[in-house]
Length: 110
Length: 112
Image 1 (cartoon, each protein chain N blue to C red):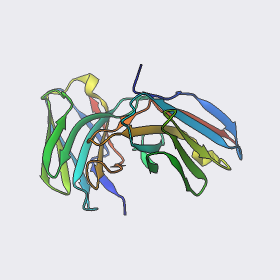
Image 2 (tube, chains in turn purple, red; image 1 turned 60 degrees about the vertical axis):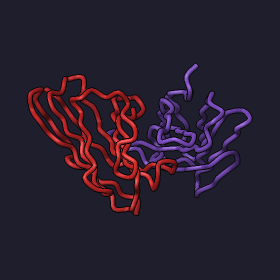
Image 3 (cartoon, rainbow over the protein chains, first blue to last red; image 1 turned 120 degrees about the horizontal axis):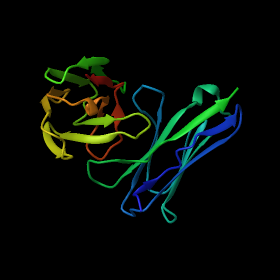
């Protein structure tokens, strides 16, 4: 079983819809959870950073962490065509390394 | 300001060339990272510098040589690369090793 599982997609949704992106993981030591957005041929951009379980909201984005289920989610409200990108979940315990999911390609259809 | 800059943006080099990639941050971050990313794959960690000391080398071939001249700069020296080394090379930094990482735009490297 891989440490971090993420459905690669592609996921296509109509503009204005709520998008739900998810990752599961196996290492119960993970405490720090991140979501990155990456446009084609660009570097990843940090969207959300959370520590331990709970929810965090920033504008149209909400990150949820459920450590008991080893499951994290990113919700995007009122999705826009500019949200079309690859979304990478990432997580770490207390060392220097973060483990990335494979990334989900998201297409928002105008 | 969460900017990490990388130069050059694009690099084409032959297998016998020597070149260097440069990364810079002025956020006072004490950890810096090199990643390699192939198309449609997540970034793969290569090296970690923590407080200017190499703390992680993910068994990277010696044709890649990292250098951290000071807390703001990170270099990756390249020598005798192979065509399969063609990829997007990403630099990242974080306030300290357990904080969130901020990525630069990357250098797209093509080895001919």
